[in-house]
Image 1 (tube, helix red, strand yellow):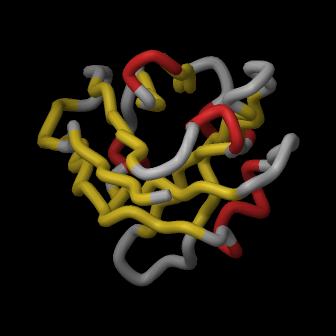
Image 2 (cartoon, helix red, strand yellow):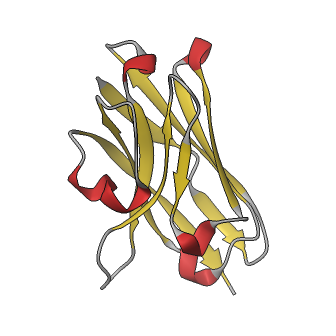
Length: 124
């Protein structure tokens, strides 16, 4: 599967952005798809993932209640709706995929398939 991320940008604290991850080459229902992020000087962090076949989701604690992951199987696209953004959410966000029927956000860094990153900048 190939992944293409989009939707990053610059937003003020408290604002919202929606990231998109389009999948090509394989049925998206065969994968769990998610996002991890990396800020300058910090380690990569798994943010959220979804098991596309059944909609099961996982989030890292710092984004629970603010971010929502969803999938549109007809469009073969996974979305990450990010609300109430904080300056500490500033990072390069990358989408990843694994041929699994479960997912855990904390484990995304070791994913099998990676898309390019998209920059999210939250100003204070």
